Image 1: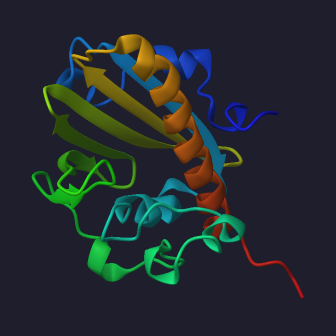
Image 2 (image 1 turned 30 degrees about the horizontal axis):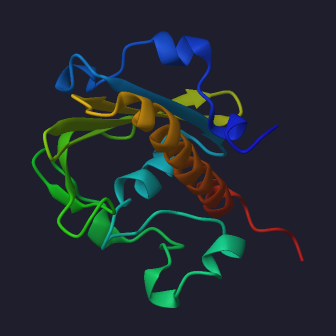
Length: 182
């Protein structure tokens, strides 16, 4: 299985409507990702809700984070100070110094929808947690529109999104897995 396959949404997951789809309609580009982590949605939710720049960061596995300066590494535990989000809250984003996401909808422990504007492009980012027999399925959908260079977004942008989500998936799995026995 390749790196991007590890975060590929199934055809059924891609087809299903998601909360926040109406925020960018029509979307010029839609990127769907999905992965499975151990634990129930209630155990995964605190990690999702604290994501963000100047918050818990963007989870990466320890072997990758060793390459990042200590001050820029993601949280390795749940922090109460980042657990409280409400619609309208602003979260700094890594897209640039002044880029942000705004919480549009939140339904713990299952749905978190962000929206943003990048120049003239509207953005929505929906995260859905779904209980499955062996853990939680994390479903992510990024919608963009209008997009000036659709082909570039569908190739380079899609590859970058898949890479960042694959890193986050690996880091989140690491944080949610029980420690190995000595």
